[in-house]
Image 1 (tube, protein in one colour):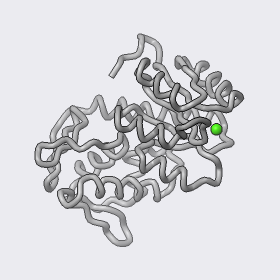
Image 2: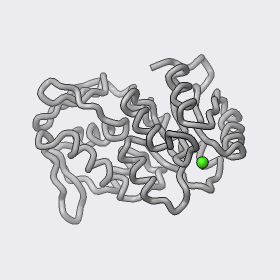
Image 3: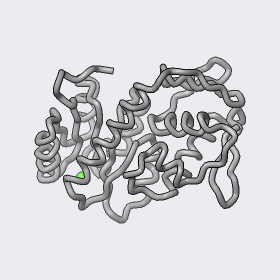
Length: 230
Ligand code: CA
């Protein structure tokens, strides 16, 4: 992780082909002190992320060229755990769900208020710094080892790659092992009380954890409540 200059909240890469939206987002983020780098296609966006190591990426799903935002999200996730906020068309639920499954941390639907976007960005950054600051410990649940210091998950000593929010959800469940937590409690605990998303977000991430960790993860669905680990 690259530390931002003192006094600066850091760099954000915005990948958006609509110049009006890109400029507006840039304007609001810069007003909040962020350094903003714009890319109008996914290839350039990934290049910028590789060169600049931003604190966060804002990624439009509908991008021109050979690679759309979902492809870019997939590539980002295979290479880094930089938080990703996706921009999707209002009624395109498929894109939202796919984006979250690919490891995006949050989404904003167009048209959006730039203020809301900035609030979401800050919330994501607060969460990622918060978890990095927590006292490191290693939690073991079933066959899964969760190293909160290194933000690493291991099964049979092999590291399993998880998206930022998947890791946070798993760590949250593990620190409440044996307790049934409702989707609302999980949203509040992992995404933060200011998060506007719905219960499906939790289900999508749970599905990813089950897919990636398989039988090693003793995660039960508690009917009418939510989920329980261990
Ligand atoms: Ca677009």
